[in-house]
Image (tube, rainbow, N blue to C red; front, top):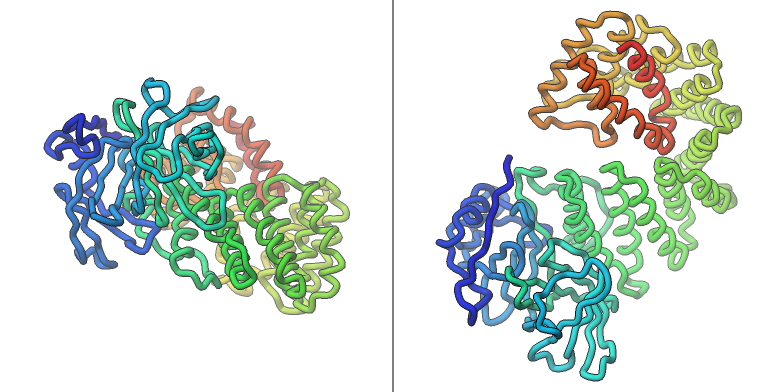
Length: 551
């Protein structure tokens, strides 16, 4: 889909916030094509001939409001009211927007009469009109300070740059208020909108309709929608939109008070979970740190919740390659683990120790931990945990060069999978493990062909690579070309797949020097993924390297 090009035309120098709809058909035609999902209680809107239509869950029109285009921002619709005007400030491609409900607005002008632009470095001074206290705004990258006539700071905001003409601003004080700074098309003027309600919107064809993606204990439905909307933003590869939503939630969660602390802990946990689903483990760890801080401060006696948080944090750190920091938190929580009665969390805490030990390349100790945990899980009939630990043990044994032991461990995995094919239908880890030790014919049995046409899975990529390594090149090429067709249709890729998988498909499908070179470039970057998620990638990386050697 080509991005539309659109330029707003000012209706009048005296009324810079309104321009004619007839002057901008590309924008109006584009935004009317699909509904937009919102992170605020309005939930869903559609734009039609200048009107803003509020839709219900069945896309039926529940409310219609007339809008006007504004010269501020890239492209903006404003529903003007005596109080609480609504602003929709669109991104450059019109596929997303920032939404705010105006409590008050104030004209801004350049202090030195130069065109207004957001600074990449240094500061810009703006004059504020008709504000009872503010006289100037000092704008610098990431921050705005509102000053009185003597230059005294009255308010401070952190900012996120949504577009070159729009800053989303978050009050540093705990009262939770927001602001939008929007610059006119010609840079001759700007506006400050003070708001207590802001959110983001995303065209539905970019990531689908909003739905709750994680279960939450958070009792604040509005806050939960902001948090869970991050899944859509990240799925649509809109990191700035995701950051804005997170900052909105963070502003609410940061309010002080014991009565809010429990919801805050749940909120930090949910923000981390959304990032984890997107494979952003470093970002997830940051939110888990906030959850841990909240639990330590207000709920130190809730030992099981505290241990669970330590486990989640350490898992995120390990998946991000931060093994030494993860080790520090695991050591810190050792005594706590001895006091917790929950077998589940004490087991997962011990497993996290094994994962971090593997990441630190202390393979004999990691193997011992996984072996012991597999035995414990088997005795408790925790089949999923037993399988997880067996797969971890096999990978560790392969890393140690103990092929015979790894084969024996994988045979135990096969036996577990055979006992419950519904639960263990995805056997790509077994396939990669067997292929890594050279048992290709047996590996192929655990990477069966799939009739699924709307996804590309690890099991299918394993089959493609194993066929190639077996010398069944024509079969592998046919499979790779089928995957290419699916990728061209933008099917669902596993969130944790990186470019190496896509380029491997291309190299096998095309068999060209160019596609092989692209694979080589992706492989050069793959070491970082291997470093960050070694247990998940070790055997696959070994199989892929064997495939690359034969291309």
